[in-house]
Amino acid sequence: MSANVDLNNRPDYDQVLQDIADYVLSYRITSPHALDTARNCLMDTLGCGLLALRFPECTKHLGPIVEGTLVPFGARVPGTSFRLDPVKAAWDIGCIVRWLDYNDTWLAAEWGHPSDNLGGILAVADHLSQKRVANGEAPLTVRAVLDAMIMAHEIQGVIALENSFNRVGLDHVLLVKVASTAVCAKLMGANREQLLSALSHAFVDGQALRTYRHAPNAGSRKSWAAGDASSRGVRLADIALRGEMGIPSVLTAPQWGFYEVLFSHTNKDLALKPEGQRAFKLSQPYGTYVMENVLFKISFPAEFHAQTACEAAVTLHPQVRDRLHEIEKIVITTHESAIRIISKQGPLANAADRDHCLQYMTAVPLAFGNLVAEQYEDDFHAAHPIIDELREKMVIVEDPRYTREYLEADKRSIANAIQVFFNDGTSTQQVVVEYPIGHRRRRAEGIALLEDKFKANLATRFAGQRCEEIFALCKDQAALEATPVNRFVDLLVI
Image 1 (cartoon, helix red, strand yellow):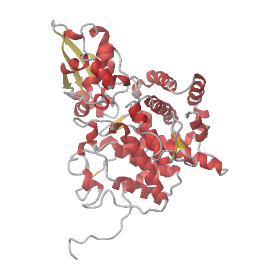
Image 2 (image 1 turned 90 degrees about the vertical axis):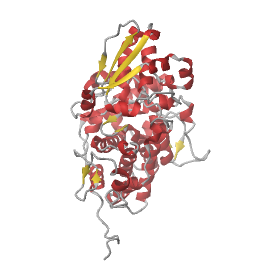
Image 3 (image 1 turned 45 degrees about the horizontal axis):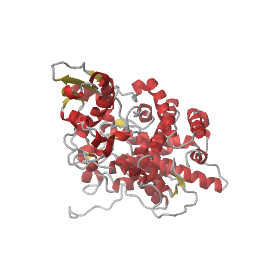
Image 4 (image 1 turned 135 degrees about the vertical axis):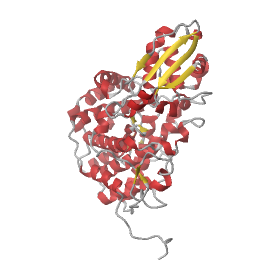
């Protein structure tokens, strides 16, 4: 037989897909800490979505594709009156959740925001619950939503631990699509074969490039890309449940598989399979680790690698606010990942460009004592030339320890330090912040502030009594878990 002829022996599904499917179908979540964190994550994620509804650049994307469309048992978009098919509802929920770059974060070899998966999870759960009630069946409860969130966090986060998609130019929303596909398929009643089929299609899809996150092309697509990915997960789950066959060796197929086409050519740090092909390195089984250790953005709507820089800048603000024009230089000491993805010089073209610029996110709190979403907008930037004056005086320095401890499993620090030098030869002390307020090491300190953030975000859309009702329910773990999803979402729409 010619060596050029492809053997047509259909293989078993790749082990990576089987491991995900078996986890989603068989694992039982018993960790009180994971469930408590998931409850806080649900509050925070919904609050981020409600706050984003204040921004027309976000809301212009929302609603049905065809105006006036009526969807039986349509999934609702929190903070709005939209009732949409689950795919578009997942898109909209994911869009508002991610728009302000304010929801939770996971940092490892790959980065990402696991709560982006709530777009698909909530849309599917709300639609199915309404449909079940209409058929005289029991609806899903919020506990099912929390379980799905924990599993989606785990799938996205464990794959991200030692596999860098950004180094081959792929965007981290690929992992949102994979995780959403898995958990939404389970919610929709998929069996093992259907779930494997759906997962294989998530990997065979063309994957998003990271170019919209980086200079010179950074733009607002990064604010809806995760919603797009989560909604695609819902669509692929639906396709698989209709009986569509899977692609078993989607990852490992020679020449045509994901590893060879999209992952191997520059990823030198990845594990080698026996045949010499680079593959995912998965260092631990799926459980509840990621939700238990997820990072919350509490104080600032800013890319997470800059959170500690913002905190240090706020600390320095009283010392520099009256001497901004006397500054000679500002030294920011940081870690390699921050330098690689958010350090920028030159003009910043839009709000999305600014909220991924380490220098901008440091200059604003240095000058004004805080950083809020409105301060990324064009009119604010144009009205305050001091921001760019400060940016031009910034020197970025890598500390090898910061880079090393960023990746150490028992630390996962996100360290930044700032020191300001003046023209007269004086300087401030160097202010170092190694762990942001949303880090697990500062969880006790952070949760009260996270709750305050949620209450403030609720107040942007609802009257006081409704805010109190939603918050009281979200604070009560047992009551929230037992609440039917459709009843919970009733509280969140207008």
